Image (cartoon, rainbow, N blue to C red):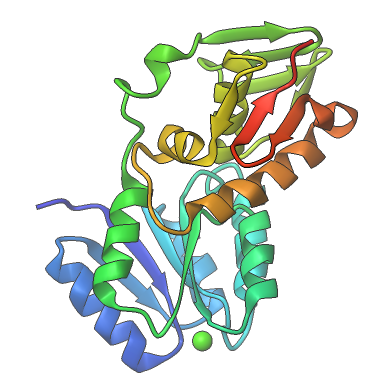
Length: 231
Ligand code: CA
């Protein structure tokens, strides 16, 4: 039995009850709320291990909540899975850009969602991730410090999400080496699953943006994936 805690933010009563039932059956401790305000209140009282966030809430939009959580150090590392309508592609992209780790579109099967939750909660596996990447990487003006979880360019800190950090870390570990999206996904999660190639692409857009004029360090390799520029 695991006792990881999930905050479920969903205003549609039927879906909320169905999900709560399934997740509790899986052994998760679930707190369910129906509004953005209640979600923020629940979060200020206690940090869950994962948040399931409906994007269409009666008060605050899901993307707005996502933005707030990612901007707050206490909540910025909590994985968020968005629950969305099928026709809300723009919201999905916005949510991923805000730092959500994954999404499922309604109607979804609880089994699929539970699988996504398992993946999102999976702690990085030291056998497949950290051991093959040096804890300290220096490339020109760039420093990546895994122990302090810090990225600096010319001594100035670049604020990255956990996922962005891990992507940059693996690419920079081997400049010139082209990594497939699958490999990058594995580095992030420890295993691959369906929607993540697109998520990797979105993360790359964000990462390049945050690297500013050094964004072109990350090169797209057509038909394969990405690599860190050889400098
Ligand atoms: Ca809703």
